[in-house]
Amino acid sequence: MKLNVRKTFLLGLGFFAVSLVWPLYNVYVPIFLREFIDSQFKINAIMTLDNLLAVFMIPVIASMSDRTKTRFGRRMPYLMIGIPISAIAFILLPNYTSFWSLIAIITVLNFAMAIFRAPTVALMPDITPAPLRSKANGIINFMGGLASVFVLMGGAILYRANKNYPFIMTAILMIVALFLLLKFIKEPKVGVATDEKPIKVLNAIKKIKNDPDKTTTFVLIAIFFWFVGYQGLEATFSNYCVELLKLEASDASMILSFFALAFLISAIPSGYIGGFIGKKKAIIIGLIGDGVMFIAIGSLGTIFPFDKTLMMIFMLIGGFFWAMININSYPLVVERASEEYVGTYTGLYYFSSSLAAITGPLLVGAFVDMLGFYMTLPVTAAAYFIALIFITKTKTITIAKTQ
Image (tube, rainbow, N blue to C red; front, side):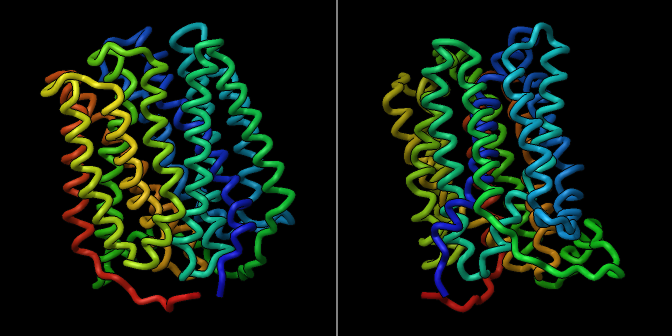
């Protein structure tokens, strides 16, 4: 059994489309909001809107997609609706005329993104056997990392020329990705009996909770904590650079691009590493490494003099460790799901990460308002170390090795 690399790269175009949006969104929207709001807690609260929608929408939509039957497949219809709306909203994003127009655009964008995020991710386990999913996830996240590097580096240059350019470029690439997906990816036909009762998300949660093997529960809790740290940092980082380090917004984008670049380079190798040493061990290495890196980054400009080159180097190292965590976590969740529950488990994965993405920015924002921006990185590191405690409590399952 071998991985169809060409098909997996094409499948990664869906994640490419998703990953084009969030890096630019998380860098520039806090800067836009700073024009109207002084409190970082309030800014981060608004930045959690996408995740608030995701907590309620994504598990339900993921479960719905398990039972959707159309001539385009069960996942593709959600991409066909969500991507075009997201692209239009993204073009409008930097053209706000007031606080409330900005909020209206953000709301439409986040609602549209929530429609297709989980179905996009669920496409991978639909067409990939369980033993190959870490490798496939590495390739798919490589595509996501490519999108992040492209929009952060390219976007920083384009933004200096005209603030609209990176958003227009991103929207065009999203539509191109959708077209290529529809042309080249054919979903497998999965039979769903018409008299079968719909899978309820709450029933799936209850099933996991009552399972004597608490591994899935511990994995979801660990995912929650490391995303508390990651999302809290991402929502705060641009203002951290501008307010504490006295850099330009485009500098924040460029620094983050080194994290994304390392993730891009490491995505595929991390999948193979997870397949070789085990997903759990790979995640543990990543959590320890990133925890240390975030402490080191936080020391620049606070304990030690700020050095932009050194920060970029630390970001490169941190991106490698983040790949070890991120590439292997989703396969660790869905390998415990039967075929009919893949979308539902995908939704629960996103439920954990989205709930964390609400909690993280609020937590970090509260610490910043109370104690200052220098608390951003220590809080992030602490969340990663808490996640480490829970991931060490998980049990591995044996899956037949492949060629």
